[in-house]
Length: 300
Image (cartoon, rainbow, N blue to C red; front, side, top):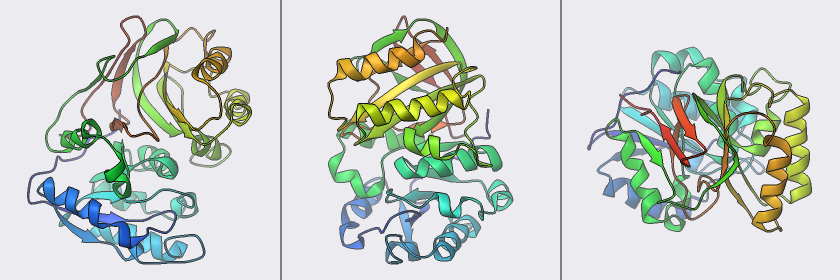
């Protein structure tokens, strides 16, 4: 289990950064209003306005913005406002020792999955897989309430009270929960940031990929031997797949049903109006019979 980070208090300052694609600063108003509702002050990073090709600034600019937020003792959390593409470009140059010495909340998902993998392993810190602040207008009230887990240690419990769940394979497992966007997890393979799945519960989610493409990505994970020693699998939101749920679940059964570990699908974690935020790098229990996922707090 990774080290948890200090919880937020009302009046704390958080940093807003764009570490991937351009941020569209004209749309930042909703994010700022939401932070104010939470009682938080904020610092807007230089990358929010920056542009370099399709990116929110050059690699050097995005790296500098991230490091500045890490160094600033006033900043208690770093929120990524936008996903897209490009976070992997700065992963190799991040000072993980600096982050380990100045631990703070790191929040985002989608393209940010690459940085979750990197920070979990190289800074030994828990991170948070949750909605990007640019999307707060599009998420529901339950998803907004999940930000409250940053203010006091609370266990995340996901049951069918949130969404219908489907058991792909039976069993009960305990292990560190890791993962995120499927394509970005595949992108880590063959790099120093390659996702480590041994003894862990793997979360996967995806947007806008067809069944054949999802099949290809799962096949790559399989051939990279990332499915062999899993503790369990949490299948999050797979949206805009151009296929029905039955076809998606059939594909998941093809890859996961015979692994001998619990696998449950239907979690609203990912690219959807309900996007339940969870900490990554903490211990979790997945019970496929009871259809429940319990995750330890990510803050202390």
